Length: 466
Image 1 (tube, rainbow, N blue to C red):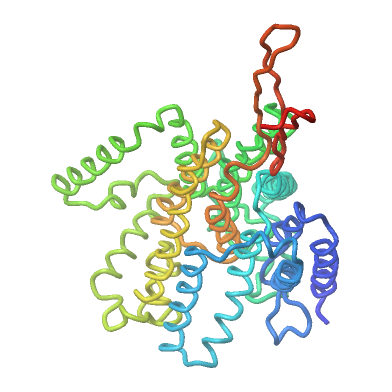
Image 2: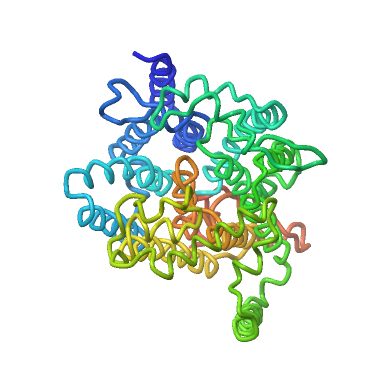
């Protein structure tokens, strides 16, 4: 047994007990925290099976969901779930075509446990605003120690977590934490890019950036800034110490869209304006948007690297492999150390088959937001839907300069689960209602606060039935 495996066993046992004994409204939090706080490359014994603690915790939780009538009765299979199945079948089919059935089933089985099981756990469990807030609270309070660890790595280049990550798959060696190539000039000095327990610094920053917009929904619980504003204000620390333009773009763009909330009724003309601007840009410029933004990042060479990757893919890199992809990163891409644009990563690994599956799934989740918009009446519900939309649009745009993998890919599927459940969550929580009555000959308004599922009952005195 390698030195990391006792830690993995402890995480699995503790979180598995918690997901089964905690109240339903908190049951998802241990899984969410295990994905974000514990390295995803560490395996449970025996390691040749390839099971991580997070995969097994998710399996235990989905088992609880399916075997508990009170949870199962709230779940309704819908179009978005068929889209998730379609997505999984498409990427599996592409892998079978390129890698053969045995390798494809093994590979996609791990993906199902890591990404789609957490997605369906969200579908089962996050069905009202209380459970949604508990999940976000768990993530943003869990982000506090992550940010502190990231700040330490940012300053010193040392990451204590690498002491156990070096035993994982892939192996993360100690020398990775102090590579000079992982330094960037920021805040007036050279600093190391933080990754903490994540496999890569950009994914580490993305975790914090995704929570910036979602965390604002905690205000509506008591309509107060404290205490949630404390961990929320620490989120930018995690973004900054990753020293990556992608997370900063995600956070800034999502907050910019959220800032347009007072003008949400003007979304149709806004879409037309954006479309016209894109058409004009395409007509008058001989550069694509990625080239125009290439000098905006911390490292222009990294931005132009993405431009070269995109050009190579569109002009010969995928020749003969557009349909099913390569199944893995091929020798044809040996000149590129990182497929750091998400649609390119999808096409290279799974071809157009896999890319279509992923974006159909994304579109189905976005359609759920439209259904939630039609049900949203209160300002709280409208804010909830608008923040989800803002984060989704910002993440979609950010994926043109980032490819998701590892921990962040699994967390993002949980976020897609929140989009899928948006029509269910809207309208939940506390409602304030009023009833006009007469007391001592004077009209008065009787105000009531109702929890989700509660209704006012009108009881007529005996003999006054209509």
